[in-house]
Length: 135
Image 1 (spheres, rainbow, N blue to C red):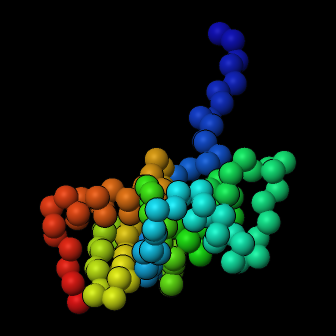
Image 2: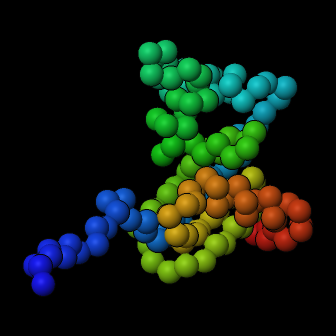
């Protein structure tokens, strides 16, 4: 009988995690401007300059570089007022205030979902079913 070396199974380096995020955001108004134009305006107002060697559009830049200040969901841009990304438990809550501020709190599995995706799905569900809570 030959001696064979048994190797332990390798783990993936990027293991998914459960993330719990709580925050507040407010929908920014839009006129007839495109999403790209609104992202360009935000970048200009924040003093950011686009490096065309890295990004093709202001939208790409905003998604990558301004994701702590702004959340882009579909064609809407929300300004993040407050966010805490280090909480526990698994749930999703969205509350709309009369002044347009959206409170959100979620915990989700980070293996195939993102905060943006989770929020976008939940906001679509609320709009579809008209289940928003107003405080």
